[in-house]
Amino acid sequence: MNKFTLKLMGAGSLTILLSGCSIFFTDHSDDYQEDKPVTSTLVVPAGSTPSKDVLVIPNEKDIANLEEKTVYTTPRAPFVFYPMVAVDVAEQDDAIEFTAPANLAQSKRIVTDFLTALHGAGTSIASQTDNQITTVPFDFHPQGWWASLWSNITRIPPTKTAFSFRFNEIEDGKTIVSVQFRDEQKDIEPGNWMSPVQNDDAYSVAVRLWGTMGRQLNQSSAYLSNRGDASSYPVWVDHHGIFAIYLGNDLSSADIEAKLNAAGFYLMPGSDQLLAPVPPEDVARVGDVIDLNLPLVSKEQTKSLKTKRRNLDDVSWEERQYPYEITCQKAGEFLVIDVSGMDSPEVTSFHLAQRFVN
Image 1 (cartoon, rainbow, N blue to C red):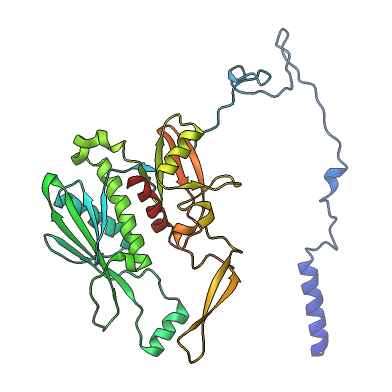
Image 2 (spheres, one colour):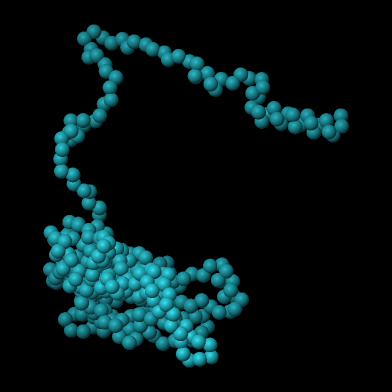
């Protein structure tokens, strides 16, 4: 028997094996379609209650009558914002200062816990004294594979952000917390400490600390003596660092508009649920005709052209309009401004909330 015949017989045997031997056995998989149901009569003792083939609904008598018209109550979603206490903010040339209504030890503990949550696993503090905390460099933009390869080729290490927190206890048991940052690179001497306002990542961290500090002090037993004043502070914060504004209870549309106008906000005419920090005529929109200045070749002069705005990338937060929502919760009515379309939503929410504080 030659090799070809052996291969042919092997292939045939394998085909028969994979077919499940259906060639030799009858397939009964469809027999159920031809079967008929078997019926039988239930034999019960004399005097038994006759059985009924009905759907049994547990606690059917406790279910409300669907035919009667009742007042519909909208289900109330859990509120994700938490009250804050007043933490004053002051922007200096080289730092942001928070005036916390707490002593130095409590303020340091809040900052330490905040840094631990911000950093995650590992140690977040590089050095610490009685009145200062310096952090390790934070990597807010981890490198991908290609960026890491490029850093190895160029021998330029990635830039990371470190923070410095200084604590100065003043009268009435308050503490001034000064926040600074600087960029650091491996084997390169770091620069001077600067204000977080000059860096989007550092500014977001400072804003998040402001919200965390206000929320933690509201829940702290050390602040129970002033707890009654906490409800009057209009700013609330959620666990993402976005702020909401407490407006009050049982407010009419006119009352809400008056509160918005008092804080320097304007309702956009012709559109629902839009507001802006500037009058409607000053709001930047896509399609607006703007001036475009082009430098002339080999001259110090520029040429002005008219063009249409294609996007809002170069528009500041003050010249934009934002969707908003008035949310009614058990504590009262709240203003929630949607800043999700911004590059730094926490910073924008902070700026908008400060208008109700100042």
